[in-house]
Length: 306
Image (cartoon, rainbow, N blue to C red; front, side, top):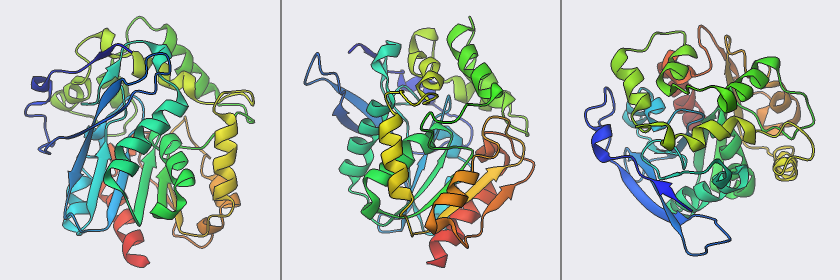
């Protein structure tokens, strides 16, 4: 598996992102060439003995997305783990779109975060693909998680037709000559990012050769029952249909991609009953940019409530 590694100097003096990097090597999951590894980056902020919050970003962002939430969570005494998915941020980037699969993303995060850090009694917070990957981690390691907080995400099994907005995004990611990641993030927020913040979202991707993971991610969302990930996601749903620990939904009010995505969780998950679910107002898809204080407080209250 051929990989690229973004030079460190791309991450110097990014606005609002003073965090020290942490790295772990994981198996690259390439069956044709056993023994290969990938370097995965993660943030580890706050007291080492504090309650753990695992924050997973989505597509095409990276852990920079959580820069506004991390200080509030840390100030509340929480330990925040925020990885960069393989292909994003400071993590290694396989160069071929075919190197990426839903199953591999789950396996990479399982080894890098769950196994390496030996997380226990953790709170999971996920948005976008962070939810698709993280909810699988929760379902496959239910004893390691105490609660779940999700927004603008889902756990698709391919049995329901995706929205026209998602299909358009999927087509754009594969066909557009330009894939301007900072612009895409800024276009999916209510607030307007500064030029320096837009550049920070572009930082992991010096040129298009670094964007294979970002390009393919929308196509990995299960959209038919025979999708390679459909069976594993159905198995995850079977776990959540028995999940009696807290699950809190905080979907935003202005996201055309995931609107209504909270309904299956509210209907099917026992632990979602009676929880303080929130509609996050004046927030678009990347609501960590639009509503960071509110989202951080939702997590803080959830941890403190139990």
